[in-house]
Length: 257
Image 1 (cartoon, rainbow, N blue to C red):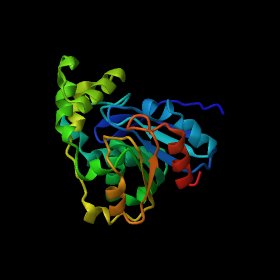
Image 2: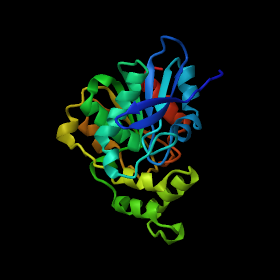
Image 3: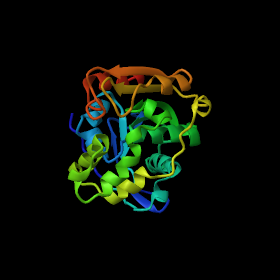
Image 4: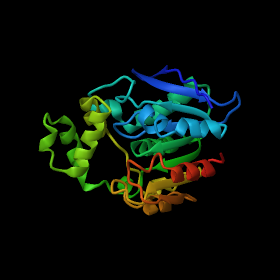
């Protein structure tokens, strides 16, 4: 199958976002793809074959670069990355595409944003897949505070925390704006507790790699969301689970192809 992808632009608040809208057919049901921290729609979704997988399943793919990432406009002010604004970006892109709602697949930070969208604008979401997210949503990992420092240091060789260094290495490989990423990491966040998550009334899949030390177990997060189901991707970590064939099979099965 040949896919023709053209970069489009949507304005959300004061920032312009780059996005793709690729439809297998005029009436194809849409899926909104929300990438992870320091990544982009190309790295998170195109390279691992998600555009093609969804197209072959008869789906319309809508994917955008978060503010401060990829080809979207950036800011170095943490306030501009408030998760409420990032969830509003999802809604703005759907609006630009003329899609009232969509299935939403968020990975890592993208899954956090998907949760915020579920809370702020549930009518925009038909079903949600939360990938690369688990215990770390309810209890932020110890390495979290070291990431902005790792992003801002001039000499990566001086970074001691291995998890934080991994984020810096990934950002450098993607040629991302490290200052924008540091601001994004320090964004105002709302970690909804189990009581708040209990208000979610959409079907939800929580899926993580078995060796994912960034997310931790998905069980507590799934248990807090009524009816949510969990899936584990064998022998995969945070970076490798996203493009795995098991992940694709589970996500496509959950979303109904």
